[in-house]
Amino acid sequence: MPKTVQNFKALVTGEKGFGYKGTSFYRIVKGLQISAGDVEGNLGRSGKSALTGGTFDQENFRLLHTMQGMVSMVNTIEKEVDSRFFISTRQQVEPAYSAIFDNKYVAFGRVVEGRQPTRDARDPLPPAWLRLLRPLLRPGAFAAALD
Image (cartoon, rainbow, N blue to C red; front, side, top):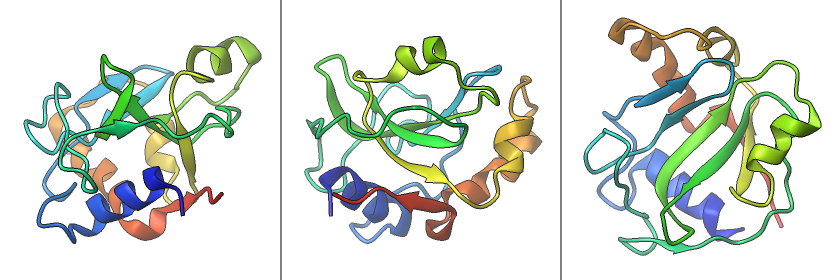
């Protein structure tokens, strides 16, 4: 199993003593993406890998951002990965849209259940809506890409 998937799974389950529980989506970009996974400050400025306690190198760029609901890791300035991730929300995925993310961010899965909230996240949301988006963080809501 790829390191990125192992890291995400451990953060979803909280098996290392910390994880996504209690975090929220900290950034919503209308028609583009929703971002979450800051397990340290919940503001999107920092994260922490469940595997290393810090960051780790990006693995590969085999999966492309070709459809709505792709889940990708957010990069640090050093092009490493921690706990932060984003979900693409664009309904029509054109090559220009895909090019924004392809070969820059490691895509590792796709939302396969509960996709309606990602479609509805195109407009700025009041805090109460964030509670509706949190179910996307449960383990069964993602399909992981395997090597």
